[in-house]
Length: 542
Image (cartoon, rainbow, N blue to C red; front, side):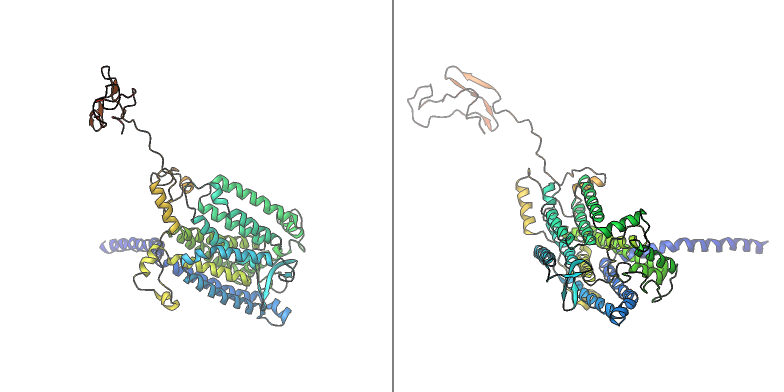
């Protein structure tokens, strides 16, 4: 009996241990992730890792997707890959420059950078300066390399817009302060880009402006109104141009043109279906053999799905999802309003481009021509995305925990390798300090919002009261009941004096004659009591 009881008791014990192991495994993973994110430089290291992974993976896929087209055009399978490699190296240099650039210097050059890129957008439209290719005038050719100014203006608009709105960070800032001059400048940029023409970049400019205004605290109704107007304009522009309208109608199913407007989307679907779960193998794609146009550019995600299967496609989606999480984490943890606006806008821009590209490749959106960041073969696009990731990494090093860790004299492993200077803690600018002083002297005026506190509209979206007792407009105090200047009016008919008998400082002392003696009691010089009209006594005035 004892042996059977022991055996029966041991069996449930083993079952419980296995159950405990299976239930503690997810908890252990969650705990490991929390420990990783609790490190002061976690965001910085994750940005570096994701940037490196996407860059290397993009170069490998560009080599695989462009080998056939490069060989058919130039007789070399490495021509397009070599160009992409050059721009990737230039992008890494831009990443390093943005990583080392002080925040104050970045804000100083924001406006000149915006002016220069806007001038370049205008110059590229001039025949003889800009290069005409495939019916569009979008590029400068410098030393055999094509440079696209519309990609450079994205970085400039993110930095300048964040600087502009951070300088006006007031809870009750008017719509005029939020929209001008940001929206007029953005409209000018969009007009120049439409003249190229380039609808996809126009959409990305609209995404940048929308993200800036949203993070700056634009009212929800106004934001939705602008979004609806922008969507209507985008649809109108898409329907005006012939090939764009054919793409939209093909996506909506109004026409069935598998060899025309719907050819690319259909071939991308075939490539994804051919890949299955595990793919046909790296470099073994069939769609790149002139079946899928722009396989190395706009539709490189289809090649990834065909060669690496569903697993490879999910890996790309996970990398961009992690990038979005880290970018928003940096924005939330930043104390500097400029860095908060800039990192949030850059994160929205990169992830929106990625998921729009993936969306039209898998058939959820109409084909727009927006590239997959760091994976599509686009020289200027790769350079600008790496520069923006450098700005994200710089903002990650300026988190309060990172500043405290790096200011102790230990630069960290990557800091020693890259010889990075220690980040400087956030300090308000002179204009901010001046506004704070003026608001303290004039409490009835608008006070500058605290940099680490949510804005008025953010509080409304969170379901909290719009007014915070310690922020925003300092309300005038309610008028209090003041003690009357005259508690009681006494009239001395003998002397003609009419006035109060009490005052706040004590009993009334009669005014003595300062001009001499011998005057009458009617108020002439020399009287002991001067006559005043009722209610106008100067004795009780204070």
